[in-house]
Length: 95
Image 1: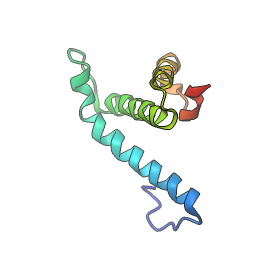
Image 2: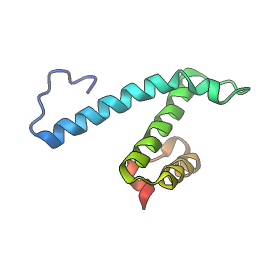
Image 3: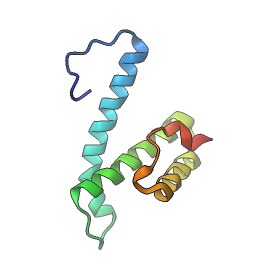
């Protein structure tokens, strides 16, 4: 949504998708500021903190969508195994 400020959603589903993307982006930036404090003793550059924050936000979304914290843990395990190639699809963690 960042580069598309003037886009008018065609329907409720599109609006919700755009809204969820905007909320996720906001949460990632907000959480990225705190991530270095969570990994005390290990230096972390801002890009790494933002990447980790993104995975944490996706895991939180998985839990909120499924009601299953274990699904969020599986998402984080998958992301850790895949490194930077982790899936951006939170639904993948529930399979």
